[in-house]
Image (cartoon, rainbow, N blue to C red; front, side):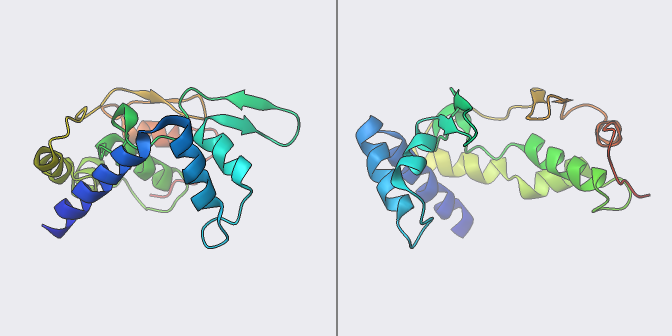
Length: 161
């Protein structure tokens, strides 16, 4: 019950933080920039909240998938991301032998609790997403595919067992 209540509160806060446009983001940047939190320049925080990235070497990027708090179903506990993390633990030798990808993901990413909490606050979420993802390394991860093959498929790995 406590987890469900916390989930409801966090989702409600995410919805509040997500609305309000630029004025709200400016206020958020000011709060997060404070010494008690990140102690970073306010304009640096604001840029990230707006999807503006300056890499410090002259490169700039405008990211359409910038930092979000409730859009694009970002808060749903997707089991595929737990499976991806497990493949990385496997890849780097942090677990020996093939883990129970499905079982661990089901225990950790509790969509059932999230769905119950969202129902209580009347929020329509996007549900489970098991589509393959191409991540930052440009390698496509298929959560329904052969996860051991995926983990071993990188040119650099330290798999054990």
